[in-house]
Length: 362
Image (cartoon, rainbow, N blue to C red; front, top):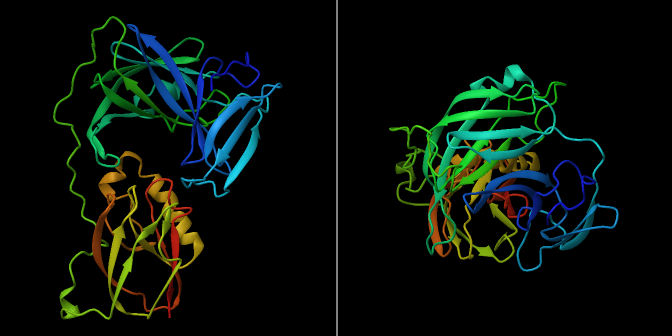
């Protein structure tokens, strides 16, 4: 949905709003035409809608009506369908308004003057570039991830823009920008401090950003001790119980509740018979624990695939790898000695709020 409201919906006239059905949120997209090619940057705009977003339309008062459903494909918003209205309060948020490509970096424009001391400090920014595999398998890990060095940050006299001179830009790659430390001259933090620019062209057609070597981060080897795929030696080749858990359409496990004895040695097979990627994570007792693990998994960002979307926290007891459709993995779980209501959850982004089952330890 293009912003055609002439400023009645905020400072983003001419930009696009794109709904995300699975994650129940709206992204904002700034586009520009470089050497005849459209490209640009996306930023989070609003999240927390009641169901999966399929369509937006402008009302006569320049508010946005959002039509939603989770029929046929589950969403993080748990309602089966919905219609919500999004209005601008009239207050301009502190945001990165535009992100424009240069031949040696990017120019960021803000919705209000930025704190010049912070904005001129190159450590206020973190940048990476990466891409995805294009193949017939479901989804893709982050590939060819590489650090991008912010060499210089020059703030305009009015404080409304900053030019970032970069080393390590690459044509044909997505460039991730994070600026969590920036604030406006009034002390406000960025409402959304992360953007993603897909760079295919640069003005003039010649990339002048010096290239970097020896910084590619693909092929990480992460040791995850809570992913136990071999039977422990002290089990003496015998488990107390065997469990198999699969999936059902609509972001669901094929069980809603599992009961086990405390201290039991369980051979657990997770069979991902769905058409999308999932993992299986066992968390500590309490809904707060499983909620927090889901949020921590989202915060892994680009490192998520390397960690199987499982955060390194004591709230996680055991977990599988992230599993492709029609694959399975067996893990060995020593159940807690303390009885109570634990949780089984999928922590793939967008799944944790709905794809859960109770693990009752008796």
